Length: 280
Image 1 (tube, rainbow, N blue to C red):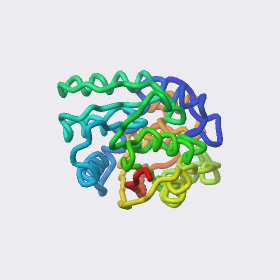
Image 2: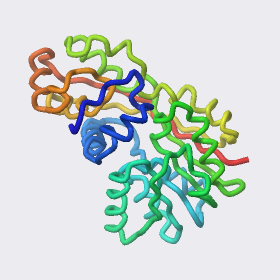
Image 3: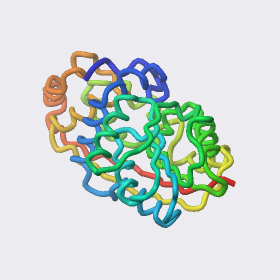
Image 4: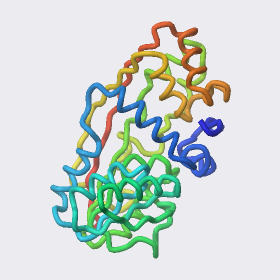
């Protein structure tokens, strides 16, 4: 890892961490994604679910936006599904947008790449028929404000697909690290997803002035079979306070896990929620 992640009680909404070690490069997010994909044993693919919902929500958008696009997995899926639509990819991280550009180029597609905070899109993004905000709104301390800003970018009657996770996602890993005495205080810390999660997502949409049309909840299960696999994920998670000597070196973290937690196998769970809403 490039730097120590965990200095804040709410690291997913800490602007300094978001601009810095969380997303200043693409490395951490790629490692986290790979670790989760390797671990998943049940649960539908998120991009497939989003593109399926998009197809039924608006089969022929002229202009669509992927807000908080990250490394662009959903952006690429939308580009394949809508070959003639204009695409806007928005993220606060130039490093992640560079990955998006490369991935779209490999598909012979282009997008308008916008480096912006999703709280401040006025005058930057407009006339969007269909927007996606996938697994990003829990990075806002005030997600209703971010959603209201995105809604202003939609055409009248335009739609948005929002995704999030349950507040207790992966809590089984928290318990394992506390039991192993590697991070005894982690079960008492707030969820990474505390600002926008499965239980409050609908009320946040309403506060933003959006009208909910559809909700889909899916249960996901992840099996981390050994210390190396578990370390690959844990080292990316800003909730954990393990010390830089462990978070900077996944091999050292794996060794510590084997020493303190001989089995090292952990099954973790998460509820993933998809909401389809529209501008009034």
